[in-house]
Image (cartoon, rainbow over all chains, first blue to last red; front, side, top):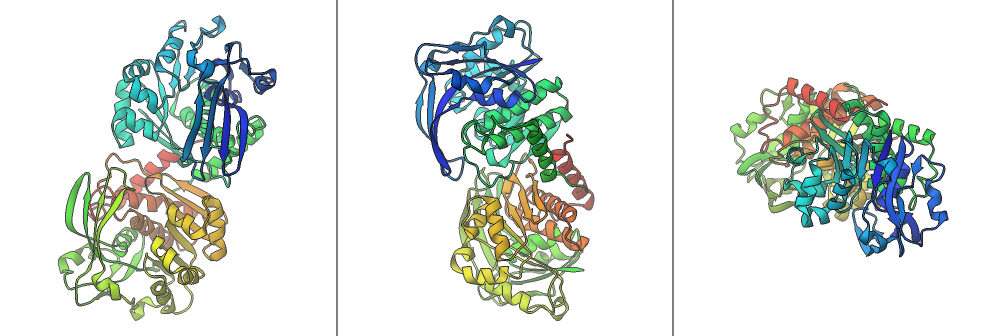
Amino acid sequence: MSLLVVGSVAFDAIETPFGKVERTLGGAATYFSVAASFFTHVNLVGVVGDDFTPRDAAIFRGRRIDITGLERAPGKTFFWAGRYGHDPNERVTLATELNVFATFRPKLPEAYRHSKHVFLANIDPTLQRSVLEQIHGTPRMVALDTMNYWIERTPAELREILKHTHILMINDAETRMLSSEHNLLRAARHIFGIGPKTLVIKRGEYGALMVHGGGIFSVPGFPLEEVHDPTGAGDSFAGGFMGYLSGAGKLTDAVLRRAMVYGSVMGSFAVERFGLERLRKVTPREIDARARHFLRLTQFRL
Amino acid sequence: MSLLVVGSVAFDAIETPFGKVERTLGGAATYFSVAASFFTHVNLVGVVGDDFTPRDAAIFRGRRIDITGLERAPGKTFFWAGRYGHDPNERVTLATELNVFATFRPKLPEAYRHSKHVFLANIDPTLQRSVLEQIHGTPRMVALDTMNYWIERTPAELREILKHTHILMINDAETRMLSSEHNLLRAARHIFGIGPKTLVIKRGEYGALMVHGGGIFSVPGFPLEEVHDPTGAGDSFAGGFMGYLSGAGKLTDAVLRRAMVYGSVMGSFAVERFGLERLRKVTPREIDARARHFLRLTQFRL
């Protein structure tokens, strides 16, 4: 069963206390699909400009990623520049040039229209909606990411797409903003009322929290000595999470917990190097070893 | 084996989004000893003024807490007033009146001088040192709490007492300040070089992290719908942690992990009501149930 992802493919300029890169491939759909491809087959829908070269596309080759849906448009690819401090939450955006992404209208190739597992990365809720409308039948598993911009500016459109969403994956500030509740458990109940029955709250270095009808599960951030580049951590988490779920093909509590762990594993690898440098080299054996490391990090007996 | 605690006994005035109390018994040694008494016998050394009534002392009665070491001095008891926002980290101190605590010189009753397990709550490092000097022989387990004030103002004295400390229990900001390292793993290595071989980092709503030679263990904060009063959470955590360790009598990795869980359990109860209201009513059965809840919150299988 393939996993459909719709979102940004971008070039990033990144500065952190550990270094600087002028132009590295990034974007939510890129991090997501590379991370997810270790667990399942991925179909990617996005847009790039004519500055996107075969060398850039190399990241997708030799992986279970289909880029038939990666549209090429005249103009430049989405560009983002940012700087991080020692505290990864201190992120300063230096430039956001939407370029071809400004007029992006997702078009699903016919082969993608029977998708049962869908991840709608952080884009305009109206476009997220249009993706679902292009799918024949009802997907079994729709997960969605969004951000403060859409929560504030397009609340009605966001609520509409959330009615069709099973899993909402956002950070704690977004959770509070969307629900107008400071407490995360109350916020989760509010969000269940809008639509999604599973809420995954990404908390950066503090890990992630999942709340659903079957209970609450918490996974810590992986303690790393050096976080070289936090870019893409959340999207890599989402990729590991959804990739694992899609591969498992069911949404039991035990499977969701493992998905949280594999999401954390992929997020932790992503930040070890700049851009996709670490994720592009990670091996299934390393993924398994880090998942076992998460076991040692959290397990106890009473 | 008894557990010796030396620290503050205070009256607190507390305001939170859930209410307000004008005068409730508090102080690090109070929260610590009540929490620890569920797991071991506690000997308390502290000082109160003549406004401390038998009614105030009732909290210690019927528990395994010896207050022979609770000195009475002429004057008023230490008083603290503070206000919290919805985010418990937004704490505003409205008043700190040291009163009899200003001239507190801990004096150990003879019966306490053979203590093998000691918790030095957050007081002047010179006083913490004087406590150890009054103990005959070398304690097997010394844990210590401190704060930014002592890290900045008495760094030499703090380093001296840390040489005799096995377990340092501080928050993440204090960890970074003490080690001049932002990264917590590097900070831990720095601290191991000063003395303590086990570092317990308290992270409030995000839980706690333990780093020692045998590895790293992370326990999440317990998700509560309402945090009525965060006062004493860290001291209750320390009480549950040290109480469990002292009761177990050994420092293996498995025991330390369980101690982290019982510390978290006691901290989570403490914040459910104002002051000691919840801790004074909690039952061993409730403690066991919440520890099992921590299991459900964190456990997964690969």
